[in-house]
Length: 258
Image (cartoon, rainbow, N blue to C red; front, side, top):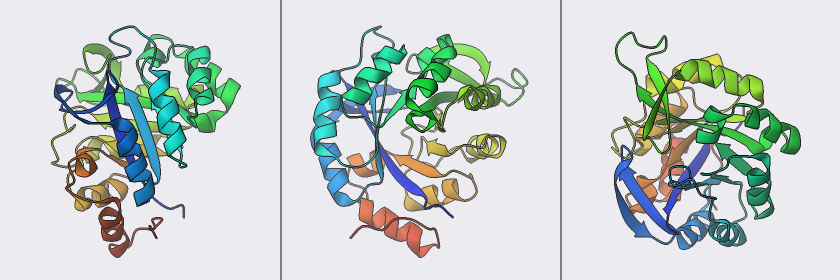
């Protein structure tokens, strides 16, 4: 059995590390490069860098920040935000990322998933899905895909999009619940499990992690292969080591820190 992974997300706006609750009330909380280095040295398994306003501002991702983070860490590092083409993906991979996270651009042009997978391999392509609970009966799964940092509804069913993303060549899926984002009240387990049960690629639970018990639930009941955290580490509520030890003590296979 593969080890479960602990991933941290660096949401970046104007070159600064930020955090929001349900994608609003965004606060500046520090320097993303120093945070990346700190988490890498603490034994984190992977990092995700999101330029959270690149798509909504219709601009390219900040490659200088990507390059600086890549110089500081030696763990898998994925990048998303404002990636609209294979050329955009190539630039961030050449800047030091191992994976690209496609979100808004993939909804607008699903073919970019296949193009990126053909160019770089499925292991380098992550479909990142921002998801909100839909109105009763409006969509078969009960969940809708939203884009542009949560600013635009799409009318797309989340489960249908996950299946299609896998078929197009995505190697992983991030299931990011906007309803749970930043609340510290736990992951959206029903949503995560539904996606995990219906695709054959790794699923990363995102949004709502506040305590190690929440990660345990996402990695067991939720069926996720990895759990993504932000506030738990950014605000110093827990360390990488303390989270991993709690998960290990509960019987999960996880790579322990030295």
